[in-house]
Length: 529
Ligand SMILES: [Zn+2]
Image (cartoon, rainbow, N blue to C red; front, side):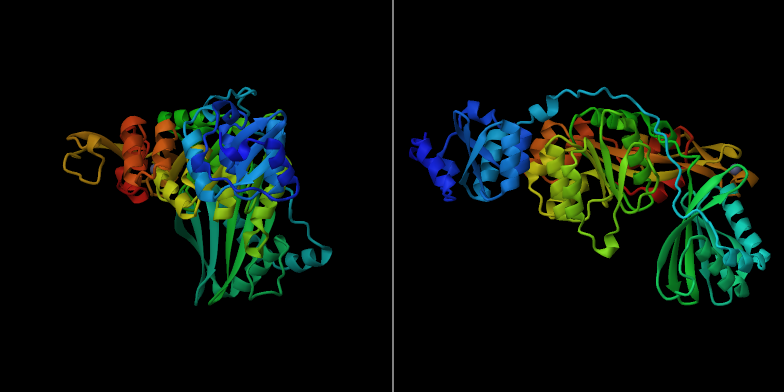
């Protein structure tokens, strides 16, 4: 024991006078018994080291002894009075690794609540349902041609299962394209003189300002057919030849959030199930925009959505309403302080928290600490593959030990188009010399499949999409590799060789051999690693 701590009473007195003594942690050995007072995940989350305890007073080394929030949290966690002493950040990091580097309690805590699966019932979106004033109705009724034209555009989009409609004014005409299974197709072309009327009609339906033509606007309306109720998210952007409108179709009735519906392989399903069994920690999804991350997040949330748990999401924007979940819409562009909202959210003690996206180091830091202090946290990052997310987080300035202990799983995701069942044909191919294909699949006479193209699939040969996954599950060795600043390559090699991690291309290749998708499609969507 160091001399400094011979007289604890003195030390406490000093602290009460807001004079916090410094300590050199290198010269100090903490007893095992003392370490056990602050569990690993708490110590890591708050970057503190317990030093000594006398009766109900715990002496704790921290870099900022004026951090009242941390002291309060430690008090609550240990049921002791906290007496801080000052240590440098560097010393604390070193001590955390020295004393707490073995994943133990965060791995072994049993979940109290059973993992009941909930199919997730979704309430209907009510916002902005088109209700017109009499004046508007009168004005529009004189333009039945416009109303019919827009209705037709929407009905065709529903029939073709489009996710978005792009209405783009060009120099001499208006181009109407549909995004079907992720790819844009030009379907209609309108006369230029319909342009203003159709834009005005959409703006009125979504309650936007029709007089504003030089600013971007966002809105929403509902569209009902005999069988469908579609919510439409509208975005208007001024361009060269007028205003470009993108309509996002959200078909509330067709959504079901199950892993089977997402088309997960057995490998991906098992990986997510393993991660969801952990009582706390961060699950990160990575991939570019449009790779289906949000749908996967909703699926994972639905699985954990029971009456015994409190779920909160922070999203930009809220895409679907999940019954029983508190969803907070975030508008990044209007400069709301995301970190402030996140802190306020955590004060509501959610069991499960979903952040639409980790955009900056402050958010990442709060998310990690929430994950370490008893919350299940879901979020997304923009990286190409799962291991690269670790590098991204390190580049954001996060401490390796924080990433190492907070994260349970990183999954990269893409969507691949599936072959149209009505025109599917098989063909024999020689893959033995195809360098871009993962080694284990380079064989002769492999049976592959393709869509020949038919009426039902618009001659594309594809219908629908499924998710492919690269799942990196954190085990004690991966956590150790991160703490010891192993290279990305080392982590990737270990994950592939020892944890049976499949890359996106490998997971896709399995779908290809099963006849779910084509070789061209997986080459388009994945990169070689
Ligand atoms: Zn077909």
